[in-house]
Amino acid sequence: MTISVSVFAFVQRRVKVFLLVFLITILVACWALTRSNESVPVTRLSKKLMQEIQQKIEVHNVEMFKQALKPINLKLSELERNFQDYGKKRFLPVKYLAEKDRKRILITGGAGFVGSHLTDALMMAGHEVTVADNYFTGRKQNVEHWIGHENFELINHDIVEPLLIEVDQIYHLASPASPPNYMYNPIKTIKTNAIGTLNMLGLAKRVHARLLLASTSEVYGDPEQHPQNEDYWGHVNPIGPRACYDEGKRVAETMCYAYAKQEHVEVRVARIFNTFGPRMHMSDGRVVSNFIMQALQDKPLTVYGSGTQTRSFQYVSDLVNGLILLMNSNYSKPVNIGNPDEHTIMQFAQIIKKAVGGKAPIVNVKKMEDDPQRRKPDISRALKYLGWKPSVALEVGINRTIEYFKRELHKSKKSKLVDL
Image (cartoon, rainbow, N blue to C red; front, side):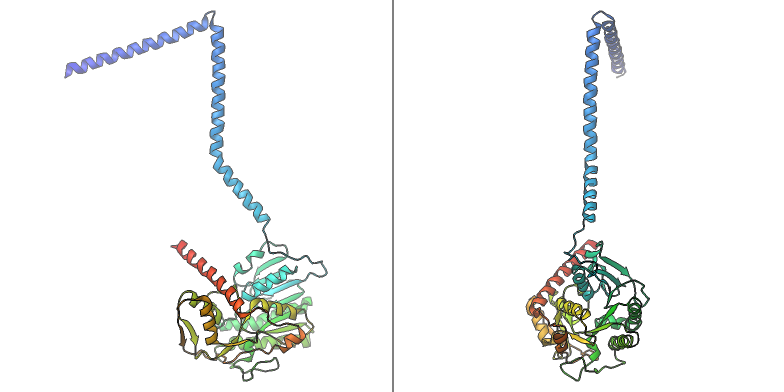
């Protein structure tokens, strides 16, 4: 074993010596050639070869650098394209209005259900619109498609605090409008309708603007007169669960006409009846949203009480048209804006169930306190002084609203999956 290792070491040393001698011989030969008479062409050939090798290395390095930069350049191009797209954000078509015809308009509660549709209509008509909303029930996404437009401004503001801006018209819509929302914080509801309205009337007085108050059919309470016209004083429980909203709107109307009489402020009052359409919140708590969401999720449609109580439902675009007509009219007394087509709650549940499909049953639950038994507007005044009446059929409006809720429900499910 020892002899074999020694032999291996001896051979290894011999190989190393041989390789070293061979390398020295090659180097000496190369040096001799460069020093001989034939060294010039060899040197030139070597330089030419080295130049070609250097060029190839440079090309290779450039290509490698380009490949390394490729994903970065793609990302930069994408960012540049996105920046250009942002700078050229596409808005809904806006009519051009001359300066003398263009109005500066404030919409309080403009990020809410009705307010956002009103914002769309006034923006597309070419006016300059400022939306003030504290997002108590409104949502920024309802008006985000206008953010960045030169005629649009969005202010996060609670109108219980004064707002000092220059405007020509004020659409005062700020207030929670569904029972779950205004019952959740009744004091806030009262303050919004009382102090908030007082602040808006003060603004209208200072800048000589016209103010439209979005009042409600709830000022009639549980009516003893049917249908309800604007001369009816109402039948309201001042200490019931709905009183914060009902009486809040009644005192808001009182303040409007006090300012009109004492301070000569131009006021318009719209008494709005049940309205539905896209951008209603999924957990809004009102009849339409409740029934549609329950039907889409294959849950029982819950009818409070016997279901014989009646309501009159109008599509949101009809309401918006009525508000704009009233604001720009010369009529200053309260005007009902609603659809006189009356349905029982049970009939309405059946209409929605049929439109959505499915096998969800309709069930009766305990009656809500102070729930009005009959509600139907007399719109003679709107027809006479505004030339207004609803034009969107109930079935058409219901189908549009169902499609909206389907999309919202789909987004909600996707969002939950992402969170998981």
